[in-house]
Image (cartoon, rainbow, N blue to C red; front, side):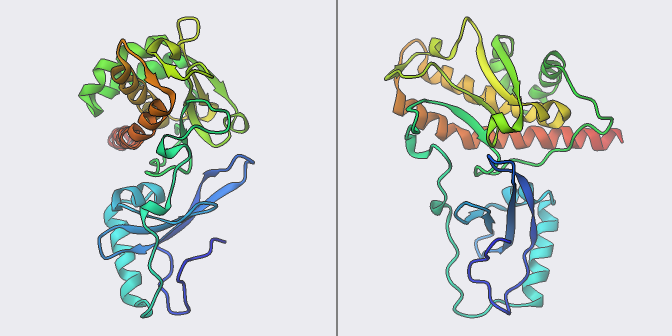
Length: 275
């Protein structure tokens, strides 16, 4: 079980607790939404990571609950059992440092973009296709093209990237905690846009479970293309230092996750209307 900072005999029970994916060793990762703070954020702990405060929307996405359901349950818990005086202060978002933040390169000295299970902001939970359908990459592209402009019209400028992506599906073990990842050529001090191409294609590694869900397909492709298009616009016809490029990728990651979540919710709402 996850230690609950400041928990005492009279502390309210968690608002939600469950698994949000697997770690690199394939073990389930547990998360807990503890309660609502005075500023409207929610105190959250994720197994193996520092605790954070998330917005109501992000906490709801993590738990799979609607924001109003989360609010109601948190309020009921707090009213039923008020917290003890003198409770330790909860951690802030500054305590959490997603992998590769602050523009630092990892031990391989390689620039990379990756959507991990446990990064903050957290990713909305999706469901597999109810009929068990597993899509091909061509079918996945069609789903993306059909829906993305309804989610975010400005993504039209990134549609050309769909045709230059070479997807390589990997097992969860091979992806090591990531849903998708891309990386330019290694070992360079400065990068140009062409460095993201390998024989004319941008290689995108994708967890093979993504194509079991149309919701995931729309969300994951939206996330990766948002980042790649932002990188293309940032570099243009020039170049950028490796550390600055990694910092930029980290900076646009939150917006990419927001678009991903918006895309997943769009497809979920569409499914609800057809059922």
